[in-house]
Length: 241
Ligand code: NDP
Image 1 (cartoon, rainbow, N blue to C red):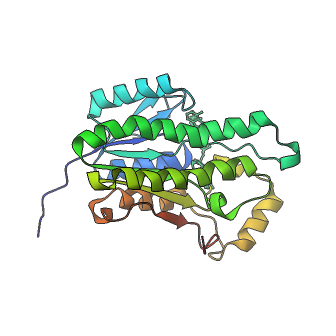
Image 2: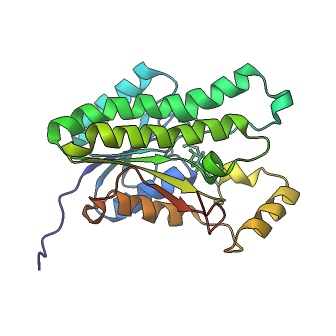
């Protein structure tokens, strides 16, 4: 049996100032990795993690954040593209700016982040990419045409990347959380929360840490042969995807 501790890896999580991203960062810190998170202010990451400033809609800002992380921890070996927003309204009332802003943050932002990360991974012939999507990406949700479009697009990115980079020791997967108790969901009307609860077979909402442990598994050696997968963490809400 190999009892040597695994080498700490350089892990970067976008949007690690709160919610799911912060819980993911805490999980990697707990496992002994060198963890960095981004937030727009450059503050707010958990203890034990380096927090750097990045605006995900701005390639130059992301590039500077990567440079800072690389200087401190070396090239990013595990990337979790987590930063995301919602801006809900029914399609009849949704203007172009709302659609474009959500897609630019959630989908194009992930594209920018992944593109910047793969250079170092290709050089090392090793890497783990996890894209945080949503059950809504494939299930759909009224009032979330912009959000669902951005989140289903991540599946196309992960699967195309798997075909581009699968032979280079790089895996690329999607995690699709269901209803997780964070600031993003806190603001939803109580009536809507009740409706969601009725639809979830597990009959409860999840804690961010439950998503974090699945992400950490996908980034582990045990998951070396999983790529291009969409892993739901949704208590059965979207099964059949
Ligand atoms: P939160 O709103 O709690 O946190 C969002 C994070 O994204 C923050 O760290 C925020 O950083 C960052 N962020 C937002 N916009 C930008 C931007 N333009 N540039 C850089 N960083 C940005 O969200 P959750 O933790 O709930 O969600 C995290 C991810 O999980 C999202 O992608 C979301 O879509 C997804 N998800 C969430 C679910 C839920 O039930 N909560 C369900 C399914 C998916 P800052 O400090 O700068 O604001």
